[in-house]
Length: 528
Image (cartoon, rainbow, N blue to C red; front, side, top):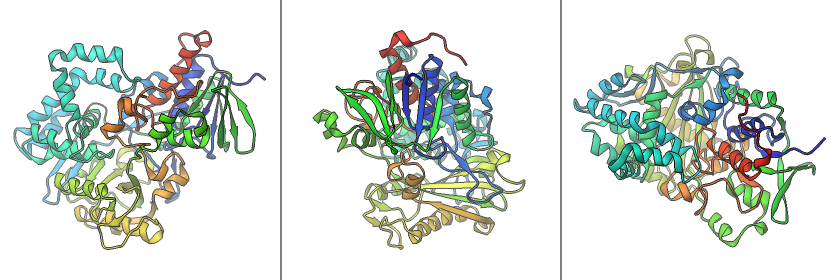
């Protein structure tokens, strides 16, 4: 049997998207995955309670819903179905007020007008801007940098306001909120959504990212796959196999074989060498790819120096709960939301981000909480709730802002201490929450990395979202495209532009780059 045209390292969503794009072009593709199951950070299980489905890592997928890459794969033909909670995001406060993002812009505006009468109209103005440029902006984000065609379309739509748009996208979340809203509601939605990454209220780009996530939620919601995140992975795998692609799980790649400056094969942990006729695509974080799989001897000195400056995003602690009843929010506006932000105002978010910046474990965590049964009733028995909450902690813990002396050992005592802080924040807004817990699982940074080695140190976005590591600076200065210093080797992971989030763009960009390098082997059209 002839060797495969391409080998893909890693069966995360980007690796599977890359493999599907190549298979559509007629290439024979082999995907090698170290874990016993595919999916990377898109998996689900029943490990908390046998009657409850929990998403092990990622859970809500606004970027997937908006992604032209995933849309072109028509995964609904392979069993994928999306489900929505009644509301997208809620940010309740202790005084009973609640900012609610709903897919109906009028309902969102009414929620924000309760904080300040003029803020409903302010939100509608921001939404009109999105309706005017949103498609072109998404296209810019999901294509290799620089996005020439999409960028020209965006420039044509905005005309003389292009620089004003650029300024808005670069604003910190606090500043964008100050410029557009009189009350707290809109500011909370923007700043809370920015902190889905590692962009605090004072970080450049945080306002643009928070607005982007808010508008994706406004336009597409934060949908979830019916039955669990693993159903998205299953659809990608089924589609690939239908097109003749191979998936081999339990085969860890330990080396990219480089000869005469070109990637020609990979070697697995049992010593097997799998040749690649045309390309190797790596759904692996860039530092791991270059240092462990390629070897620094094959890299230019400037790349080795830049790798030393690569910045991971914050680490993560995730708590999964099987609840005997829905979360008893005192604020009714939070009860129908799939995602709930737990923090007492923008100042609390700044305090949280400041403690992280000082490498201290926050004493009062900002928690992103998912109400999965609210979003998808199939996740647990009627009248119950499958829920989770995650918060960020430093990659290197130098101190604890709280009383527990956490030092980053992440033993059971430290995991319990962070979980207690998370639960205390929920309990303040939902009295009786703790009494409804049937079972609980706490995943600290080492647990997340053990379950998915791509989540280095518990970094779920494979590198900071801050401006100095975006666009042509991602993953290293002067990049922004999937090519690597090794010919025939392409970076297909979220460390490549445009970064984290389940949208498939890094995988698709890598696959298209490989196809462009071998136009004689590309079949036009492809199948859906």
